[in-house]
Length: 306
Image 1 (cartoon, helix red, strand yellow):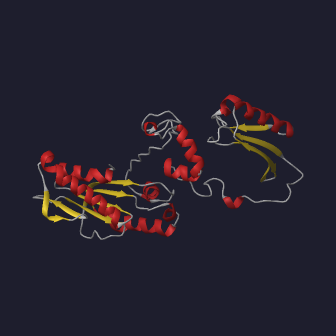
Image 2: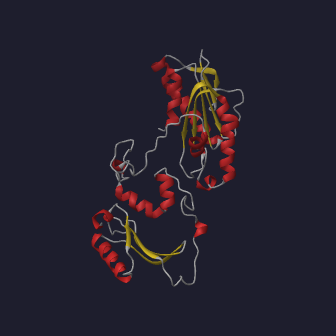
């Protein structure tokens, strides 16, 4: 049972004078939300809350409460809600998939729908819940957090905890639902299967720009030869814990700085345990004895190697 499939019927049972609007990327999904809530309300509201479904207004997308002004409207993004108001609005999956999320036109259309239609339907003191996969950092949630004058509360439950202030007080690296088989081992395999960008968006709810927000793709160029003069050599390492096929790769790189430019002149990449990682660092340092700066991320095996 999702929030959108159940909460409106409970909310209206407790508050029969209130109005709910739910919206989704398609009329079909919105109709499903309306039908599930209507059926639950019809089955249980009279016994639990002492109210019942109106007999003259019982469609999947527009149903009311007998003897009260409350009810629920369900519509797809861009659907008609003219003249309707909401004390509680739930926007669930305004974007269908990753392909749509990558379209700036679609993202702009959804934002325009929020600004010109959905937000104008809110009654004074209304609550809004937005539920969606964070396929893109410039999605509806991203724009609301960036541009909305209201104080939004962001609830993020990544598949694998990665922050010290995790909402469930999990340790970093702890899985969200290990009892269902979605444990740390599953996560490592799934990340390899779907790729780091999809993993970050779909499972961690932490969308990343395709080209990165610090280093832009257009800055990277291939050249035939590096300058003979090197102002500085820098070695950088990113270590992991294990050398299994499901683990991330250990990567070590050597960069040459000449003037304002940086050139990657060597790289080591592989799945390594602690001993192999340490040996790889030593061998690369021997290969570049003039390299005086070695950067190691203070995580995973990097902490022990430091």
